[in-house]
Image (cartoon, rainbow, N blue to C red):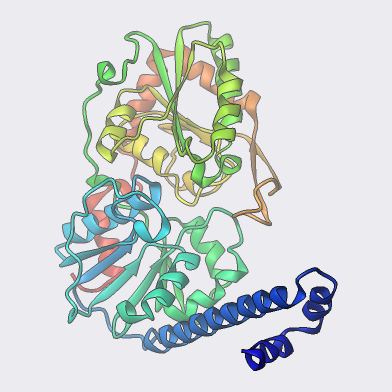
Length: 429
């Protein structure tokens, strides 16, 4: 025992030994420090070995695409990324491809609240893997599985990013992919800046055309008849700094005063239980204002579509979007939209059915957890209020905007265009 303690002691860094000498119970402190250091070293060794095996197995060989198509993502989670993975899987099935799904919700701590619509791939199936997870999650999944799900399969990473420059620490993930797809040209441009020459990056927007179009049901959501309902929805897990709900609240309050007409702002909030301080700040901002309602009820994709269909206008004063799923869903459901005129949403918000809010590009700040550098948009609240006031006050104009959504020709809303895009990107059909 004495020799083991001595060996542990000698293996400690000199600063640790010096600090231990100055404390009471130095021998026991030395043993604990040595044990902790050895355990950490062992964990690091195991992790590095797993990463090395993952890289060997997942080494890219530019294999030709063959069926089936397996979509890896958060299929069981009530989350925008989960809905994106589900839409892609349905799109491939609509294209006549054998489709599989792997749900990673549990691995990242998302509760599994929805059934997975497609079976997992059999062990001997190869084909194409499309991982609908960003590089940090991809690297972790590859390490945890030691790259087995990627071995012998063509691998397409489906990545989304909201700023003009993708994070440089995403670079190691390019070793694991043959190519990258993104939900928008804006995101593709950001990712190309850090992609190696061999990795092609292509926009491949979601197939919104597959989504149902439920009838309005105001009674289901206790929405007043005869009142203009403005919907805004955001997930605090996607950061309140980026979604910028406070600006939208101020714009609505100003717009309602200008319009001089009854209107209700319904704020659908996801993640309030995870970010109670931020939610309490929102509650404080709207306290005493009966024209603003905060809603935290968990909704399925179908119920969220019904809520959107029951509204008159969809509002977003986001700072940046990698796609803008709520806005795209609103257009598909025939709703006029008002949003910040910057980033990916401008690719599908046309002037016939949508209004864009003026903005100023400012440095990213206050959100170091995800968005550390770069710039994003600061929407002009007065401009938003003026445009929203007209949308609220002018029923005929709002109806014209709603009717124009049916003529929006973006690929997300056009089945034949989407299938043609997939045939070009993935020549399996």
